[in-house]
Image (cartoon, rainbow, N blue to C red; front, side):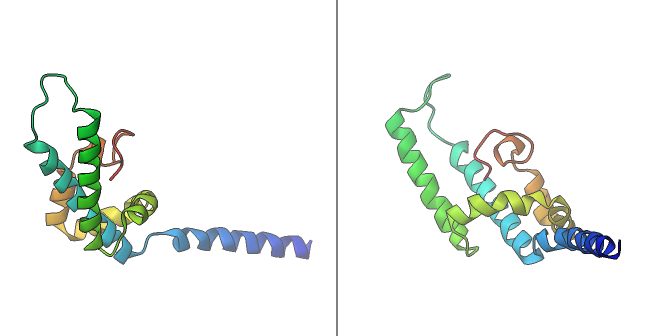
Length: 135
């Protein structure tokens, strides 16, 4: 019986301390939120004044590949300012942004950034839908 209580106490302790250990660090939240804001603004501006391909017409496959390479180059340069790689951002951002409380706390401390963050298109930024690439 005494052994059983000790095992239960250890398991409860592990569960209690696992949550805070998995939470995103404030510096990490800051880095990823700032990067997401800049990415969203860059992508919005990239497509804002783009060439018209005709009503309901998509660009050619070759043009889409060129655009993809151009966007990845711009993203790589932008993320380098935040000491991130494109692969690292794509891998880590879902877990950083999963800590909604930390993101809201950071944005609450920076009303100017919150306004810019809230202005991002929800369906393309991985915040409100499953469409887009989740930048």
